Image (cartoon, rainbow, N blue to C red; front, top):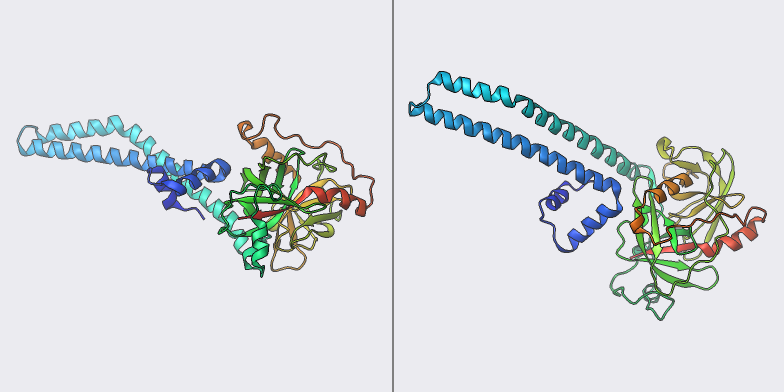
Length: 370
């Protein structure tokens, strides 16, 4: 839901400290939010324009009234002067009023559209982030999530009082530390930790480079100084749409260990006919958010994001083409010098499922949000 008061406080220069920093960070990472702020600013400007016009008219009325009372201006002349002024400035006033009305209706439309997107997830659509703070985990498990530079590569910059909020999944899309996950999982993060658990457990600190709220996607970048790269990715981003009934599988972290799930494409569209997503028959649980969806050849064809709560076995995945759109929309100055170099060769095509999983698991991560 849009916080109009916070937007107006920002535009009036009343936000300070951490609230201002969080607001400006959301402006940079959330294009839809930035557009709403810009539209609200236009709306306020339109109102100020009309207010100034009305104030000028009142001043002129007062001026002529006072002159009439003093007998300095015949009433006939006042009528003519005011009428001349109105005729002269009527086009300007009409344009200002039209701009204000257009801005009002466009703002209302945008807010209604945004609220529709947000409220769909409050009805029968469930996000799949795992609310870790509700689990019964011991103090030692919590302490292990907050580690120092000398312990598995995470800088000792996180205060121990900040406990784990959410858990989910992410996967590598380039060898140099770029990871894709769901926007809803990381959008409110104070700190993000990427855990690599397949062979030797490693932890890395990450930051959100870009967020696409509309398609529920986010791009993360590992920022730990000791990170040396993922190595060559065995899979690629699929370039073709999946077929109805096509076999699919996923890896994710609904638990503290990786879980495999398989199923098929149930529909070409997602929740309420969303053409940016697939409906899939893969068993999913909280923690599956951000998990990669693979076809039988090992191409990434989607990103698991949610499920329908009033139906059994109905889950949804954002299509890979939305990842490509997100990558194309990221400002170049937000990326490193070489940009994002996607893998071009699929090394899983001719392997059986067990062999595919052995190669993939090093590139699917547990995403922890503090």
